[in-house]
Length: 291
Image (cartoon, rainbow, N blue to C red; front, side, top):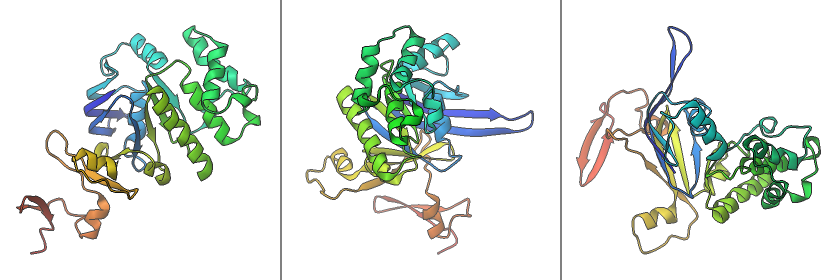
């Protein structure tokens, strides 16, 4: 569904200052996958989500979404892409919902923009996210979790093949966050929908099968549910423990990003060089100042 190779995004602030938000990011997402993206502020995850959503254009590299080349699409093709291929759920419900419209009218709005208005379909989507009983309520009559579930229904209004969510549980409590994640998981399974969620919520992250970490505008590691990782290695014995394993990601040039807390623990955070040795079939990185 998504293929990014050496993806670059450069923002020009003025004639003298440029900010590199993405610097050679590689990413693949399979059709029907439910995947999380994590990273600190400024890591590039929101920039990536905006590019995937057609809200921003990449500067260089390669990005294909459902076979569409987002680096080379025309403005008209980009509008069609946003209407037909991708749905978006924002953290801020003020961006998801129009307050003076009812829940069902909010879901109908994207259909009207596309010229395919169906009240029955809007009600069906609300029922799909467990909000059919709230179809005639307005924004001020709904809790934060209810608003977010309606936002998911809005994101599904035009039957997208890819659903993007930016911190969808950022403004709700843990119990409500579980309910919202269950909605995403049910949609992923029942519709075969590809879903990518940006999140800081570690509890949410633990419930996903794959999470990609972005550092300094690059994909640095993948966190996989351990039993899936073992299947990946073709191991016969499954581990019952509910846990994850983190895998570092090699880019096309063989470069690897090492988590800063690892470097800090080894006293190597401020170094720009390290010793690399091959020992008994393993690649070992060492502090060059320690013999």
